[in-house]
Length: 406
Image (cartoon, rainbow, N blue to C red; front, side, top):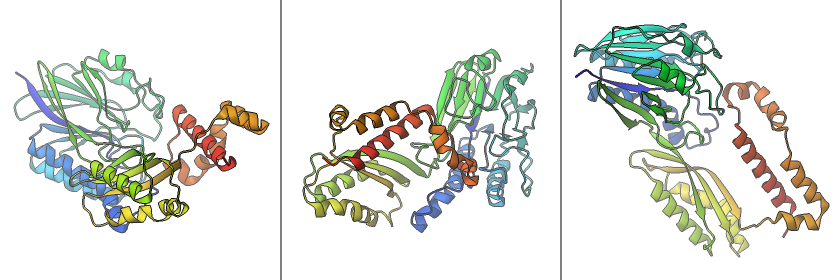
């Protein structure tokens, strides 16, 4: 029976700048800056321990087109470990680390095989004698909107055929439509596995053949929450086995605490401590966005303490903890019910306000100054329709709470 085993990972974003996190304590921020490299080490360790035939890295190895020397050097070190074990690595570069960037080059070991700007085929003969054809291309520039999938041509003579593609499934609207494809496009190529990259959320688009986004290996912001990692894939003539391996050193999480039954500050503190301990993961750090809802404390001093001292008390318990749960954002809302119909009867202003929000169509115009800024163009991703609607709802609620005095 023919059999191959490999690691499929994507979107490493090595040396990501971790925008907006410099307010963290020095030890936690340092660990955050190191997290992508920690995740890469877990990948190479897994490849060696599981004695895989090869490793696939499906784009965006580096966070930017300038590819810092630190990132290149760390990557090279890990590739040398794989070279010592005779494990080849097949690399495509994506929109973030495209080939047209400007950087100081560090040569990679001979076991690293780079796909160039046109779709090409690379042949591998494994230690056990199987022949594998791998197909892929690297982005020549940051923006590739062509249907590169049309250039993937199956070359006969191999036991297994694996496509590597950094691109966007054309039905998805939340990401830039780079190198677009459909699931049907990939299925028609008659390959045994499709190793995808570009989308940072893990997803299996098809099981026959497997068409897989592994997601990124380390979450870098609140949008990239939950476990992150890569797949160990075993292919045979008869079936496929996919084992997801978690690699993230730090996890982004969100949790909501309903504090309606809390009658005093200590009750709220206890609820927060219980939530934190239920989230804590052994030997991993957690960056938590905490929603504290339905606060209805009668004592004004205790209300003020929620905003001024609650975080300090929770931080005190976490600052020296290796498996920390650090609150990066605390959103407190009081038990305030908004009755829009009632407000409309009180003043015509509210009716006009609600009508304005209901038919507001200038979100892109309102956000334009952010995206036109030099840093915004580089680091901000565009909001999906659902994210824009969520932003409008939050703005409406905030404005009503500021205006209305019950």
